[in-house]
Amino acid sequence: MTEKVPLLDEEACIGCGACEEICPEVFRMNESLGFALVLNPGGAEAGKVEEAMEACPVNCITWSEED
Image 1 (tube, rainbow, N blue to C red):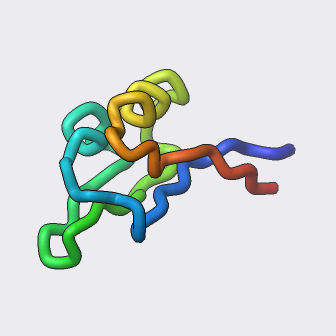
Image 2 (image 1 turned 45 degrees about the horizontal axis):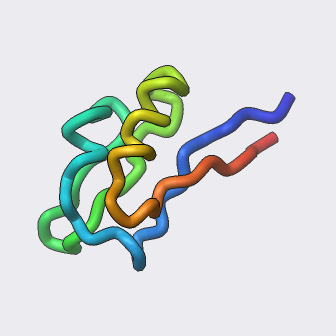
C-alpha cells in the first residue's frame, strides 16, 4: 500500500515557521539551520498537513509517496 508523506524542500524553505505553527505534530523549525524539518511524517491527518502546505509562502511542502 502506498502512503502519502509530506516532503519539505529545505533549500526553498525561508524559515517562516508557518508549517510548525499550523501542524507542530509533523513540522519543526530548526533555528540553527534556518529552515523547517519534517520530524514526524505520519503525525497528523492529511487535512492538517495540507493546511500547512497551503500556508507556506514559498510552496516548498509537497506530497511524496512511499511504499
